[in-house]
Length: 83
View 1 (cartoon, rainbow, N blue to C red):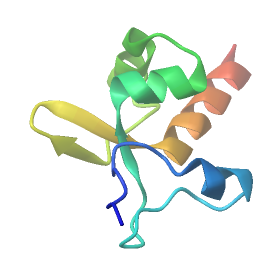
View 2: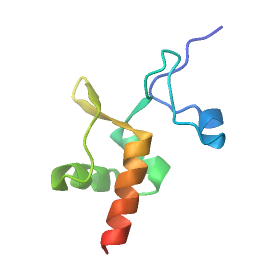
View 3: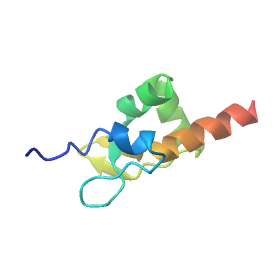
View 4: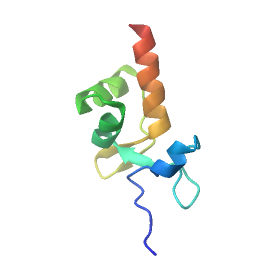
C-alpha cells in the first residue's frame, strides 16, 4: 500500500464535498503552480493574491509556498466578486 502524496488533493474527498485531507487528518497542502492549475489561473495570479493579502500560504517546502486548496478557491471567489 502506498502513502498518499501530500502535494496533490484526494479527488474522491472533493467529490464528496469533504475538505481535502491527508492520511494524518491534516489539510492537504499543494504548491502554487498546482493551486493555479486547479483554479484555472496563471501561477503569477496566485503570487499576486498573496502579495495583495487575498491568500496566505499555509506552509513551505523549501522555498515553495504551499496552500490549502479550499483557501485558494475562497481567494478566487473573493477576487471574482470584487471586480
